[in-house]
Length: 461
Image (cartoon, rainbow, N blue to C red; front, side, top):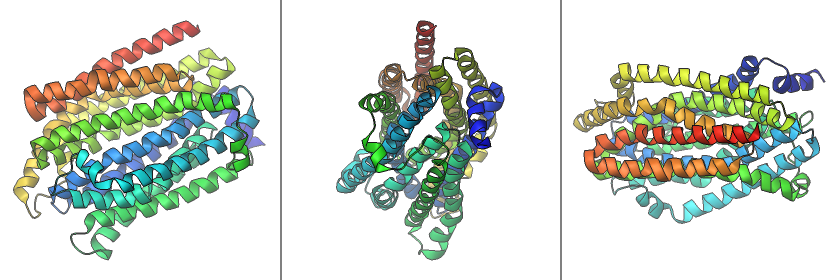
C-alpha cells in the first residue's frame, strides 16, 4: 500500500522539481544508455575504417526511427491517456487502454516487419543505398527491423505505459538492460564470433538479442506492476476498451507517430541529398546524426518525465502544478541544450574521430569523412535548444490530449519549414547548406510551436 501512495504523491504532492526528477532522471539514464549502444554500433563499425559500412548503417537509422514512430502510436497515445484517466480516477478503463496498447503495438510491428521484408531492396535504394552499401544495409535491416521490430516496438510501448503510471525506474531499467547488453555483445559478435567482413551482421545480431531480452524483462515488469497499478496484459481487457478511449488514444498517438515519422522523412531527405554528394558526406552526416542525439536524448528524457505529471494534473484540474511542470522542464532542457552547443563547438573534431578509424583500409576517405562530420556537427549543434523547444511543446500538447495541435505542428515543422530548407540550401550551398538547414528549419518550427502552446493554454484558462 505504501508504494501506491508514493506513486500518487509523485503526481499530486511532491515539489515539482523533485517529482520531475523522480520520473525524468531514470528516463534520461535509459535514453543515454540506449543512445550509447546505438553509438557503440557506429563506433565498432567505424573501427573497420570502411566508410561504406558506416554509410549503410546510417541509412538504416531511418527504418529504426520509423519503428519508434509506430511504437509512439500506442506508447505515447496509450501512455498519456492512462495518465489522464488516472487523474480522473478511472482505473478500470486504464487497464483496458494499457492492454489495447500492448496488443495494438504487437500487431503493428508484425505488419511493419512483413512490409519491410517484402520490399527490402527497393526501400533501401529509395533511402539512398548504392551498389556499394546495399549488402551491408540489407544485412542490418533484415535482423534489426524485419526480425526484431516486434521486440523493439513492444519494449518501447511497455516502457511508456510503465512510466506514465509512475514506474519510471522499471521502464528505464528494461530499456537500459537492452543497451548494456548490446554494448557487451557488439565486440563479441563483430570481432570474435564472426569472420572479418561480417561486422555489420555481428552488430545487428547483438542488437536483436539485446532487444529480445529487454522486451522479456519489460513484459515481466508490467505484469508485476499490474498487481498494484492500473495496467493489464489481458486480451479480454483489450477487447472491452470503450470506443471513446480508442478515439482518445489515437487522437494523441497518431499525431505523435506522424511527428516522429515526419522527422524520419526529413532524415530520409538528408540521406538522399548527402548520398548525392558522396559516400563520405553521407557517412559524415550519419556520424553527426548520432552524436547530436546526446543532448536530444537528455531532453527527451526530461519531456517524457514531465508528460505523466502534466497529463495527470491537466485531467485532475490542478492547472497551477501543470504549468509549473511545463516551465521547470523547459528551463532544464534549455540549460542542457546551451551546454551542448559549447561542448560540441570546442570538441567537434575529437568527438567525430571516435567514430572513424583513420588507420583502416582507406585512410584518405576516412579522413575526408571526419572532416565533413566535424563541419556538420559545429553547424547542426546550434539547433539543439530549438529542437528541444519543438519536442517540449509537442509533448506538452500530447499530455493535454491536444492531438490536433500536435499534428499541425508536426506537419508545419517538417513539411513547411525543415524539408524545403534542405533542398533550397543544399541547392545553393551544397553539403554545407544541407547542414545549415537544420538550425534554420528548427528555429521556424520552434516559434510556431510556442505560438500554438500559448494559444491553447490561453483558451484553457
